[in-house]
Length: 445
Image (tube, rainbow, N blue to C red; front, side):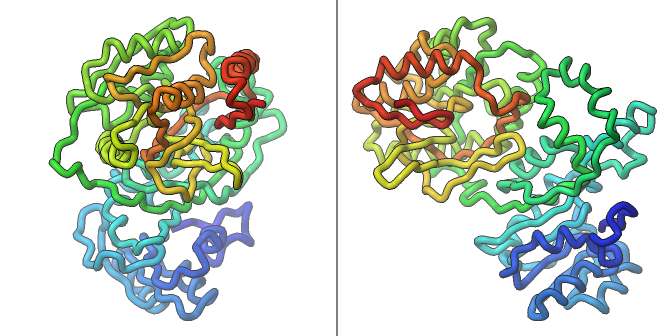
């Protein structure tokens, strides 16, 4: 339950956050309000559309009794500890007004809520941003996060990963801004440079006081392969930053057990030098080639095997290379395939996966261990995902975009480095007979 902020008096109805109310899809009829407090948010939602049915959950009995006079039904329940006496697929929308930030285990709460949503349903949440400049100032003064209502979800990275791990695709749909003092960003420039952060992205993140998230369940999760087994995989990565590697790829919960092989290559002269060595060394049937700043959710390996089985079926066992984000130029336009949380942005598509594609983003590529494909050292660290798809096609194999969402947590800005243009020039000459070529980052003609 939000507390009205004195700097935003017109954005609250009593203690109900009107920004949160506006984020709820208009066609939502049956709504579950988690931590409903006195029921003010639900009361406002019913005023917006009188035919809505609002059910509240509140663990504090005195508040639940007040909410009961405003909502259609109220349950006194501690969702972290108690069984939820609600039927599966009962709601079009679940709304959580800052409550997720205060649970000891928000991921488990999210997983418990997921079955309650109908197909096409959404979970809408408001979450405070503990990376706001005022929180950073507080930490510098020694305050600690508890003085701001400490929770287990602090930043955009936390939000993205907890939702992904619980089986949702999160999208940031709104933000409440409180700008920093004029001299604050200037004072932070040395720290920004030391961490290698993008200044523009840092400015946006540190001035957002609160985030609003629309999350939809990922279909088909938590079901194993037909034989019930999840085989181990080999994971390879070229790395130049041990901190980035530790905080992202190596933090992936799906890699913490299951006998997976992790191969790191430091100081490679090109992506090809490192990744070709990984393929040669790998001992498992599938080889995952990931960037060091990628995070793979808890269910990701199981999902990979599901998608690989399907890809083998639709290609008659001609899978050359797979990836999580693909792009294909067609007579009708550009076709994107996959779902990826790219920093704070959800890249998603309506194209069903797995599906053949013409180019794959390099953030995650997957090849069978026995693949005849190898990467080209001449390309350096760019466009080798497109090159390998074209090479696969020449060998009678296929590049496949699969549905295995992950988080790409790059610290850098959107501007491409100068080396990209050199790789682009090499691709233009190498594949002159195939021009124009559409890639995830550029059009080569």
